[in-house]
Length: 280
Ligand code: GUN
Image (cartoon, rainbow, N blue to C red):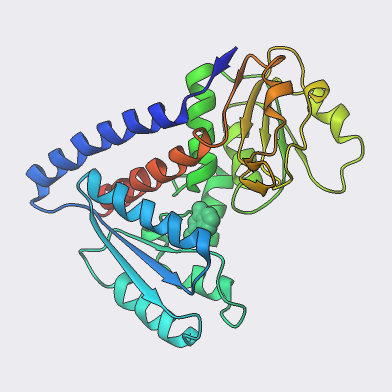
């Protein structure tokens, strides 16, 4: 069994990105810039944003975090986004989710210039990805994709089962696997016989946010299992996959933590650099 070391693979990716930033700096006399907007006091968001800022600086990006209290008016945020859209030193803009209820998420996402949308959430990028055109790709599914490709470079004809249909993970993950010529099944909370569907997968990506949902007897022998879940439980943080059981049958599996998580941030940096390159 291969334990997919996301921490190490992400560190290697950051090392490559650091070199690339240094080359871009020599060539253009400027570096890519990432601006993150953080609204409110959501505890996990504070941690994610701190990690994003630290990693961005580590690879040599210009990094800025703009913080607002959760009482901020929507129009203030929209005005700031417009300012950042017009700021040449900003290559990528990310508005950390979730947002307070009085702020319209869709409006905020659509205010970001698609060419600076490092999350790949803008409908223009979503559409481009599903049409197979160049686009920003959401960071978590991109990270999962890179991990899968490390284990199995040729995915053509493989059966992939995606558990979860969110815009952040399940749907873009499906598009990436389709592009690699996988036969993809998207499953979700209303799927009948979820176990039976999972058992067909050469690849399983679990992204539903249900602690240890995917059991050992749900997984085909020698499947590749990618666990996107981060669930707080009495026994600590666990994924969407029952790791102890599944690791006995899988060919390769990501741990939680230390699997997909570090890749998400590294891919955000990668996306920021891609945005910079496309605009220069
Ligand atoms: N909150 C949790 N994950 C994400 C993400 O990938 N992007 C943004 N913007 N917010 C998030």
